[in-house]
Image (cartoon, rainbow, N blue to C red):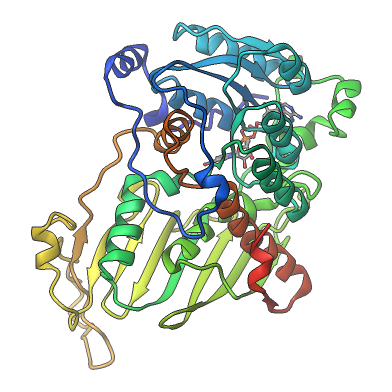
Length: 457
Ligand SMILES: NC(=O)c1ccc[n+]([C@@H]2O[C@H](COP(=O)([O-])OP(=O)(O)OC[C@H]3O[C@@H](n4cnc5c(N)ncnc54)[C@H](O)[C@@H]3O)[C@@H](O)[C@H]2O)c1
């Protein structure tokens, strides 16, 4: 059985790219955008390391750990000093990989051994399965390290809350890996255009989806099978469970949490407030060997200053139709975003809306609209019920880096200079509540109302 390589080709870096980027000065400063609900952790004084090298441990060197490492290799003055993974395959692959870029790390199976042995670390990047984030993150914070921990924070709210408390108690930085929060295209669209310029007017509806084709369970090469005693030691009953942890209730939250966590977070960002309720329908409709729901449709309600707004989210795993993107719809227009810009990076103006030309002149939108193609079918006519479709106004901001790099840059910048984190633990906790409750709403088959205090850890 082969190990699928989930890395998109554009994310792989050549040694030449790496050397060139290392030589470039000032690469480490990411565009940062204010986040709602910023907290004491976000503003906590960071270690005064100025431009000195930061020594970082990576805990969890699977698919996402390696994606993060590829970005970290591009960030000057970040040294990967230690690696940890319970799987020999991940340890060997990653240890050898970073050597090609002139970095050599001490390699550990158990994060506790790593923390006991490594005395000179500044930060840790945690990219293990969701269920161990809380334990490992808290241990790193208590060892005096700043932590970048992948989303979803945890697979239970108790664990997620314990992470916020550990960050608060230690005064160390904790950034959670909702990388869209540092993506300059998302910051431009949400902070500048929707929130500051009110490009869409009152946002009444949002829609996001992540549709994926059906897939087999992940396998492993037989020679890298972990012995049962080691699996037991780390809490996995079989290699199938270990490789496919996100589908099982003990370890992850299924597609709703895995994929929805990124996109549902944006609904709250746009409205500047967490939701007031969620209702959802979902089920394990297709797969027989999963525990979590393979299809979920959820509707969130937000109470904004301008009135009620609704957001619909869909994740499904049997057909990839439409892929993944997010749409925000207001009285004056709509804005479509996707982490892959070809799928969403434009705004559409309603015919009656105030002109957007001045925004284009100011460089906030591209000045050339792209007309929607006219249908060649002659016998379809537009009547009074149909609104004429508007042209697309592309957004002028591009991200010429791997998607996770700005978020890591923001984290390392915060460690060095005390700059605010774009996704501190308190903010990610709000998002975690909204997402985990949707799975609960599916089970309960009823509307789940949120009280504002539920979003505070
Ligand atoms: N931000 C994003 O876009 C994004 C994308 C994918 C995954 N993720 C997140 O990254 C994390 C890892 O996901 P992945 O896709 O890399 O999973 P993965 O299964 O590919 O990798 C997990 C790695 O962690 C190791 N591991 C498991 N338990 C461990 C433990 N107790 N201690 C040390 N190592 C352990 C495994 O051996 C494996 O190498 C998850 O939290 C996931 O939600 C984020």
